[in-house]
Image (cartoon, rainbow, N blue to C red):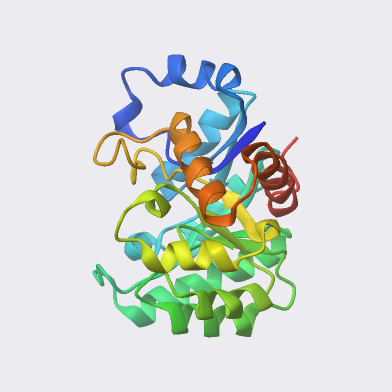
Length: 256
């Protein structure tokens, strides 16, 4: 069975058919879906989704572009949410220098604070990193002791950079971008990476794979991601599904 390790099913894009969609996952061979918080509001809604559906699990945290909302009171709320049985990680946290709408030092400060929270709670982390490879790596290297692993979500850097994150023990989230014609670096990275370090993700409703690029994404599109990984690595799809499921359980030990 397939595990989608990164979605945003609480997004308003799913307001008209969320229940129907989630109920369709089992018939589509999707056993578990992990819903990711990007701020306090979506962290709360991720927990609510996980409470409502047996096959949904939650991640809570504040995206770097939303860290202006963070203070010590908010961190206490995150810690409280993270104590829920179905919260499997802290995320998505990290650095985003592409949008650069939050002071970089502030991003770094709250990135480290949330990493320390993950260590305190013995939870893995979901890392968002865009145009910030070296700073992300240096902070993770600095904070790696006591960290319970994690994943570089929507990995977008070079194979050489992947080797450095791999040394720290991280998994790599691979989704629809790998099907894009202009994703040469990512295809090279997928070719290089051991399958044991790859987890499947959609980032739904964003980044739908070809042939649905530009449309609303959902876990039902993971078959296209599987096709591309199989083609790049010359492996059987069934084997990829089996191994990435094991990887997802290793990444998120609280998945049942």
